[in-house]
Length: 289
Image 1 (cartoon, helix red, strand yellow):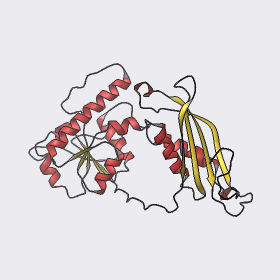
Image 2 (tube, helix red, strand yellow):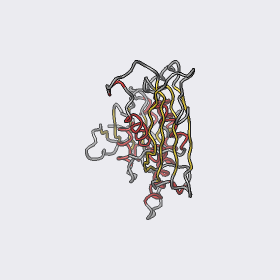
Image 3 (cartoon, one colour):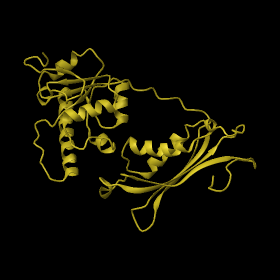
Image 4 (cartoon, one colour):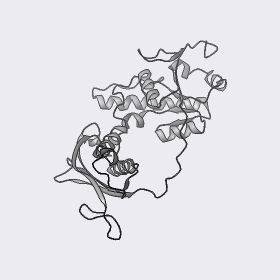
């Protein structure tokens, strides 16, 4: 497949649509100087189309150019990525969902990392036979534990009495006193680290509980009905729409929306204003009233 030559075999005709010199600002990159700042990316996408009867002048029977720009925008907005290779793979995969798309070439260049452009180019073909879809994970029950609830010695007993599917637990800072700094990006990392430390402590206290950080891990835990505590750093830092200030109750509400939670429960703490959730009080000796 080339920019100018046909991709069809045997000298037959082929159709191609393309997007060239499409420049977008985005945050991407594995190195620390690339975090927290936008850089220019230049995209080129070429798509070879399966032959079919002439479409005439009917716009509904062609692959729209919006398919290409939307694939770029949607993958950039889905989560923050470290590698151009990953972004290119995801764009190609999205474009190749189009029934007429037979082959896709994606080129991505960073324009602000040196005196010239540096980047990656991949070429992918649509599978001859669609692979079986992985079963979707069930919608989760998300439970936010106040620091009092998370440290309660009754917590494992309460969890054992739950009659719904294993929830995903979210926790706050716990007993740690996280240092305060003036730099907003650094403070965000410090606060997320404090929650992650508490998440691991709570998971160890519960027992038979895993700590999950990625959407893939969360999906696996839901499909296999495993008890889990969410460690937020990866998902927050990888998602452009994530909150900048790390307030545990608000972070849980954002997480529940991202996961399309079936239920959201706050134990021992009020939910943020405007968030619809069930609230339960913590009392002793029982965890719940």
